[in-house]
Length: 372
Image (cartoon, rainbow, N blue to C red; front, side, top):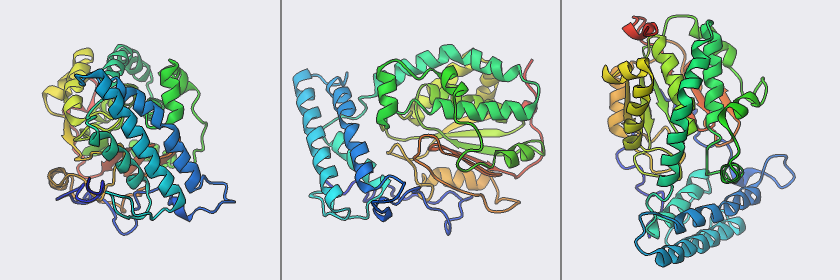
């Protein structure tokens, strides 16, 4: 089995707006954290990923695409043992030369890529598909109420803040974290309840006031949103945010995974889902029809993303349609933390959902006002 990171991003380029000299796709370098630090250290992170293994094993054993249930259960057991063995080796030596995978500096990308390689190596391509479909259906039923909550607010700034809080709340549906996986298993973590009980400001990194100030000025010409999980995350979080951007006169591009990974939505799935949203909401429907909102593949095969390695075709697409920034370089911070919020003038990272907002053209589009 080849290294899970080698040739993972062939022919891919940095996002054109990215300041590659200061960008670090990792929030935490595990091996640099001391044992007496308040931050989780290497062993804490390894244990976190090990605890999630039973969730993946259970879903894999129930993979609806498997023709032989017993064979699927055996393959799921092999996956669990293989990945657990690899995590134990990394706990002992972060630079361990893993059989079949080689030696690389330990990072979130290596840990997650190892898991995906072990998963797909046993033939599990998209075992989360039934879960994604079920959660999308549930979220679509709630979408009209979420959009009404936004439309009932007259102040544009307050609407944007509520939409951003919705992105926070939606990201709870992340089966890559054991805590949220347990909430899902127990039927907990409702969107409205989660949005209401979000951590109060100021957040760990909080530039929301500057964003709201910028929001009152000339609209952005184009926004690229890197979406994450299926279900409430994309339907009740990212799509309502996209709708607010559209109402403000901004073209929106939604970028999603090329290949299934956990419960992340793929670009192919998102294209269908976006049309379903358009059937529910007139403004979204018109935006889809007139390609004011579109979907592209990020090229990613993991549930996290490195903005220095986005799909080259999309990179050119963005470069052509979104000219270099007219203001300072975007502030960029990537996060894998459940409740981290990074908000700035040109780029917002919410958990690991990314919004690239570039000031290029001040001309208003017909979608600058709500459809009556």
